[in-house]
Image (cartoon, rainbow, N blue to C red):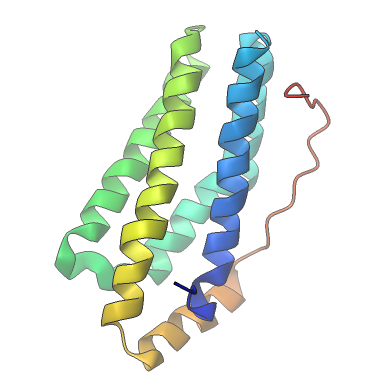
Length: 150
């Protein structure tokens, strides 16, 4: 199914998020130092992911009546908690837990939340989402120098 154009900026962010998960997992496979991967997680969190969550909370309130908003917010909170735990620990399992949780969250939004919005919102509501995104969304870029996943 083709994604409604008004949601494409968020889907593009999701593509980068999946790539981010892959990079973390590649670093883990290569036994890269915990601190290097943690630094990358913090970079991505501060330069992209936390803003993405805030934008979703602003432009996707229409999901509240289905319980999807609650699930999205719960997963956002879980990911915030994992970032905090990663910063207070040296437990490598947390890095994999984070990558797994983020990957799962992105798939949930792409396979459940977005199709629900496309099926149940009017074209006017979808256009409103697109207009809001045009005002507050910044396209994803990455200038991270330590390419530990290579």
